[in-house]
Image (cartoon, rainbow, N blue to C red; front, side, top):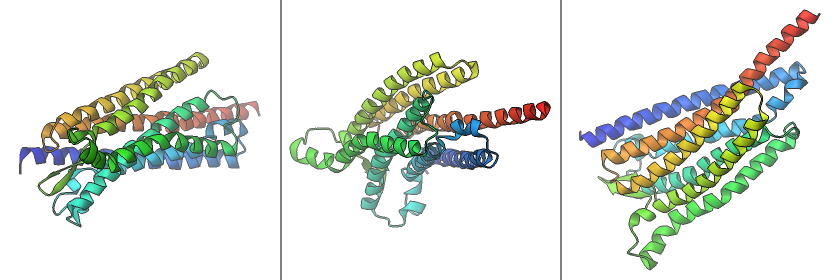
Length: 307
């Protein structure tokens, strides 16, 4: 077996393992969220209702992380070679469609939605009221989808219209601007069109700028030093890793998809977003619930001492 295939398969196995870890952690946090919500409802802990307000959006964030992770697994060459799980049709055209779906699904929907939800959840912490409303979760989900539509349409245009437009109007334009798949040994290798990366990079730059502005407001309002460290860590890591992913995806067009360097760069791009997603689940879903349950225990102890 060639060294390139060995490295690609090894990185593919690591990718699958990391996605499984993310899914299991997300599932644990979903169960934890339902447990926390039931504790509030059945024990009439109204003082903690504010912390459980965005519970639907938190679960939606986790589901989008799972969606993104599944897309990352589908793009792997490991599962689409001859005799592999996703090579049941042994059809190059079908594999090309899988790669196109991956770009539109992940770069056009899952990833933008992930970062929009992250920003909306941070913004919700600035609100003194409104998060308790049952309509808030639905309104926030609607805003996320509305903001994501332009990016989804742009990625759809790049994937569906871009290749035809290049062939008819701009044949001298390098194919890597609009090409989402490269064929090698009867296997469709997923690539990242440069236009898709540029659009996503512009989107990421706008979000990063707003995230820094939002983080500055939150840090000025937060008194607790531990919460300040969490907010600073989340904003710095998400901003830097998001931009790093964009840079790595942009560099991938300079490399041949069948080479080790391409697989390494794409894996690092995956790893950067994996860290963002995992950190978002930890800081925005798990830790607020854990802190609330600790406060609940302290409150119960104080009541017992008072009685």
